[in-house]
Length: 87
Image (cartoon, rainbow, N blue to C red; front, top):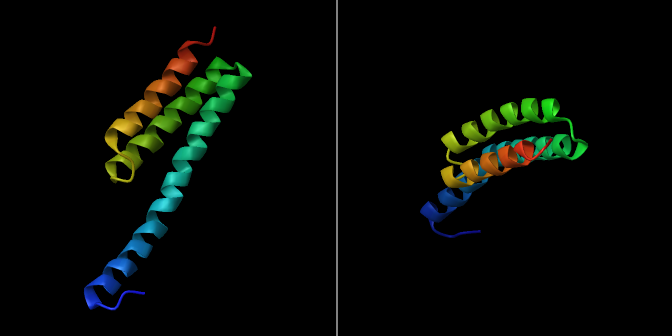
């Protein structure tokens, strides 16, 4: 543990921030996996509906600053490309 008062506070804040950010990051990963599963099953309608919800989740996490804007856009783009490749 840190000895300086300000360093103790920063460590405490980091833990609190982690407790808030981890579930949101997990929600993004789960949403991305849902789209990938729908694409793998070949069901375009299910994949499109999963993509819509995933895009909202990604946008909310990006707005909170948990995920970088470019990373969010990259995830959305790659998922959309995978769905577009479905016949």
